[in-house]
Image (tube, rainbow, N blue to C red):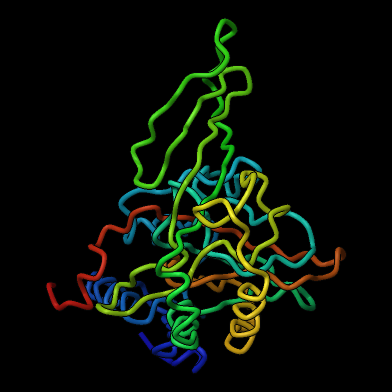
Length: 299
């Protein structure tokens, strides 16, 4: 494997891995080690194609996520999905960070790069947190975010039932009801906007605070835990700081990106509706290596 630094806008610079040979078991262990420390890996000039993607991601995955139903299956697999349709900008966010199904690892694969624009935006939440002053850090350490959600769950319709109170086995969820007629569950979720990282004593600002709610039909509202709105001046300050360290990533055909979704936020620049850009994503809900094992020298 040949290793190159990716960007100094990332804490630890991220990494680009090139490998024209088959990845060995030793390589896989090294990649896990690198991933936990760097948080973002670009695999370039490797022998990836739509047929062997899952055989590679399987080496890092204990369980895959159930992705949003609005995304199409790709390459004949329910685990490989299209990214969100359309050509408009998608603002920075951590994938489904508002839900109980938040993946640990998000993978993006480029089958066809855009002819112009359409870059994937990347922001290191660890680096962003370091830019926050005392007041901003203190605000988010004491104020969890409350999301009101409506999640479709097909296949549970019942003609003689309306709604039933429900318990979800996830901390921070409450007031859940299952709507049988609409096959959906409605509930509230408390979640901090800042997360612990795989690196001891390092925090990350990775969440769903900057994305427009019309991009996420599952989110009915997004407030502080006391139901008050998040102050506009705080959101403005976050966006200005994030802008300083956001990377515009230009794809090359057969690039594969591996992202620590608890640390990084990603998005998309707008591009022409005449472009044939085709990017797919895979979501590893749980990695098959312990959170922080490699950064704590346990393996």
